[in-house]
Amino acid sequence: MRVIGITSGTSFDAVEALLVDFEADGDLLSAQLVEHRSVTYPARVRDAIASVLPPATTTVEEVCKLDVAIGQAFASVAGELAEANGPVDIVCSHGQTVFHWVEGRAALGTLQLGEPAWIAERTGATVVSDVRNRDIAAGGQGAPLACLLDILLLGRHPAQRLGALNLGGIANVTVLGPDDDPVAFDTGPANALIDAAVSWVSGGHEAYDHGGALAASGHADPALVGRLLDEPYFSLPPPKSTGKELFNLEYVTSRLGPEHLAPADLVASVTAATGESVAAALAPFGLAELFVSGGGMRNPTLMAELRRHLPGVRFRTTEELGVPEAAKEALLFAVIGYFSACGLTASIPSCTGASHASVLGSLTPGLRRLRLPATACPPSRLAVGGNA
Image (cartoon, helix red, strand yellow):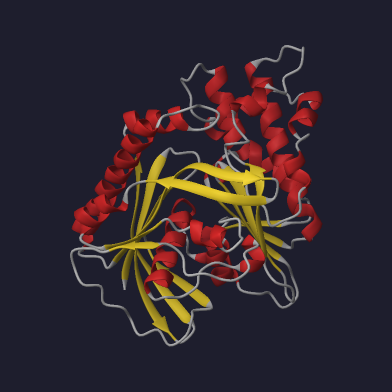
């Protein structure tokens, strides 16, 4: 089965798409990575997304227009990928998260925009979309769904506890022990607060801290770091999920004290707090190895904070598993698309807190008849190859 996984993360800087050829052999699912594309949003779409994200207010008209614009942007990327490589069977679109509704420890709803009909029309493929809400309806967080891919890739080590950390706008982790059920949760911000602070101090000229250079040139203020870490979410036990509804620029500015900080010192403080919050969430698990992905791993200053707070952990990358760092999220949704098309459950109740595992997403029929593979059993292992 040929599947495109396509998504845009909470940093909403680009549309990530990955074309994958899947083949099942017993409980082994082989994934041949054909081509990965990362396409920056048109400026007008990125600006429109930024204008509706909390704590901003919006209108139904603006949401409708943005739903179409994101759907068309996704359709363009998926369509060009299919045209370059031949017809695809499934496109699994995560869409763009614009709101994740959480009260206390309960996730009550989530909204991802990007109308799938545009993708179906452009590619001719069946589209799997709205992949989070089924898990929420079953009592789960609807996040992090990456635990499915992490479990398939890492499996269980006979003696050690392993972790998979994704540093997107929000940081999420999957923990796999030799005996206990897997655990996954959002630790809190990864790039979200750093990006917000950089954009603010640069007057919007910079969207993120290139190479962690601004933070590295400054000095973290201990008082501000402490205030940034003074948030009840950090002490909640998993499963839990969060988003930019909580961790945004207002979160930073509301914690500023009377002292005046230079821009570099402010970004250094936010980076230090981010690294400490992630490390504090991981420390109790006693990880032996941590496989890191996401844009945050390209920030050496943030990574240095993590290593400083987790001195006994061996840091590795998903590249060692055959998965390009920038393509991991897109691969996840390609895998979910495969599972959903085959009628296989893709959520992990011990990770999301749902009462049971669910088949994820809704189907939008394509122009061609979908031919499904004969899947004898649900895959428990994933082998990744290719040079996408």
